[in-house]
Amino acid sequence: MSQYDKDDVEAIGLVKFDFLGLATLTILEIAAEFIRKRHPGQEKFAYENLPLDDAKVYKLFSEGKTEAVFQFESRGMQGMLRDAKPSRLEDLIALNALYRPGPMDLIPSFVARKHGREVVEYPHPAVAEMLSETYGIMVYQEQVMQTAQILGGYSLGGADLLRRAMGKKKKEEMDEHRGIFRAGAFKTHGIPEAKADEVFDLMEKFAGYGFNKSHAAAYSLLAYHTGWIKVHYTAEFFCANMTVEMDDTDKLKVLFEDAEKMGLSFEPPNINRGFYRFEPISNKEIRYGLGAIKGTGEQAILAIVAAREGRGPTEEAGPFKSLFDFARRVDRSRMNKRCVEALIKAGAFDSLHLNRAELVASMDRAFEFAAASAANANQVGLFDMGGDDDHGSSTQEPDLVEVTPWGVKERLTQEKTAVGFYLSGHLFDEVATEVRKFARRPIEELKDSREPQLLAGIVTELRVINGQRGKLALFKLDDKSAMIEARASEALLNTYKDLLKDDELIIVEGKAMPDRFSGGMQLTVQHIWSLEQARCKFGKYLRVPVKLDAQGRAPDVAALVREFPAVRETSEHGETVRGLSVRLQLVCSAAGSHPVEQAAADLHLGEAAKFYPTDAALASWRAQANGGVAAIAYD
Image (cartoon, rainbow, N blue to C red):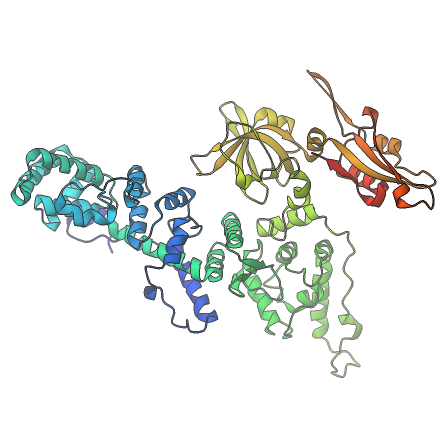
């Protein structure tokens, strides 16, 4: 090792090595550990024994399904792979080397030549064999050096000096080497000066951004290995990746969604079954790693596992039976209330008690019970005779604090704080059926169009920045099918500040266009509505079935309209009434009459009966409708 500058070290003849720490190596080792442990016959599994011509692996690359595949996971890379359709390791090496500023311009030509849409041309027939694997394109520094050797008569050392001179672009050195190349090209192959200059210029161009092949080859081999386990041991692949990415919830979410797309399912966090790491249960199911829950930590999870296995303070083994049993048996010096709260919010206690709100409210009581139990265990009473239940009623578990269960939104929002994303459901699920009646296009089917498009989703990752024309709201719109980057102007931000918040549902109209930075789409929002406003705008009327009996009972329309009146808004354009009209579907029959003798009619109530369609208002209408059914007509 040396503390001298790299240039000085090289000048005295020492070789410089760069040592890189790659998380991919850890991922591959964890996956190999799972494979050896879980699959009979694979106890000696080793990556160096994998065949490099697996068609299924190249199909994965060709389809661009390379999320979490080393070096090929970006959207731009995925698009390039779909175009190139690599079929051999050499293709991966070349694409890896080409996908960087400068040589990226050569990718279309490389792809066209590979698939026969462009004629493969070589600078000279003598280098055709050497350049054939990259279809006549100088991709690597080594190819520039080999061209100098073959055509210009350079030695290996001289070719390396030429490569360096080309990279530095020093005119004096370049002029000197041009003369050497001309002379060598004429001597070895009889190449005239004009043609030699043409080849030299081509070499100079590629040397400026040519990539080191040995580097690209090593990286591409790692990429192939990660692709191989993604294809053949998919559960192990995702367990290893998600374990390494535990602290990055954004990355964890991407991996979770990609795993589901690959046909995997997840066993939810569970204190009676989970471990610190993500672990494969079968080829199609993964046990969620408790270490990925925010606020836990490895020591706390190890304490939970130890208690389950009889290595805790009480030395009792077996599954936990309640929150109180859990608090009593786990080493509380390694686990605090914040950790327990995070586990509850993540759903890890659902197998013991489904009301997460009651569990959170009962944490203090559980820790107090655990402390009292520990104190009692260290005392011997006057009449204690060493029986199995020495402590009598002192060990009786108290009741949980009675609390109203969280609603779906609260439960998922709390879950997101612990996990980083919605795990047991999605906020969009509650409204998806209704919203899809007017905002029909899912985000995953969004197309580049100059025409405004109507979308709906949940606001996430909202932030406000100062743009050139004032403040700008940047956020992601998530409808479970996909997410899109969106932006809203200061005017929209000020008008809809109560809607533009994380975890809020909004309906938007805007123009989508490609985002050159991310490789995806970006939405410029032009209009925003809440669900209630969207019901008013896109709904035609509320359809309310009414069956009139002999007493002629019908919904109390006047009372409902008084309780949920239409909203009147005044602006510079005048007054606007936001409300939804009502249509009663009447079915009348006399007492004891046959069903075919019933009379039916639709009664469209006037403007005065318009109401504002909040969830509470719709619930009240349904309560008075026949069969509890009342629905907004959108078609």
